[in-house]
Image (cartoon, rainbow, N blue to C red; front, side, top):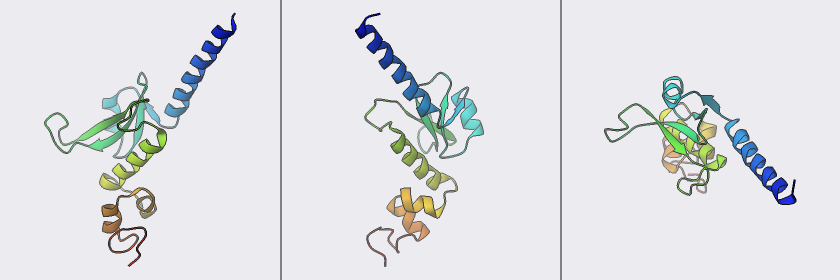
Length: 132
């Protein structure tokens, strides 16, 4: 085996390990339909054959998404929206706060200004720097 072949094998296996560890942090379902029926708003999940992570959200407009649960997908390597785990977790937390049962601690860390204002966190206007 040549050095170049060995390096290519190592880089291929590293890519697979990163994907597995990323998917290992969330629940894996056999299909999106099953995940939507069993999951709750703000839950992160993946499917067996997908290399993506999904967040369960609420369909708010359009005939295609309807009015029930939808799956917002995050593809690795895409720019909009970012698919690194930190930004997916933030999106899931904000979805949970908007449609689910998020705590005030979660709202203080990930909530938008309007969510913080509605819960009375960081003053009457929800700003972190002003505590009126």
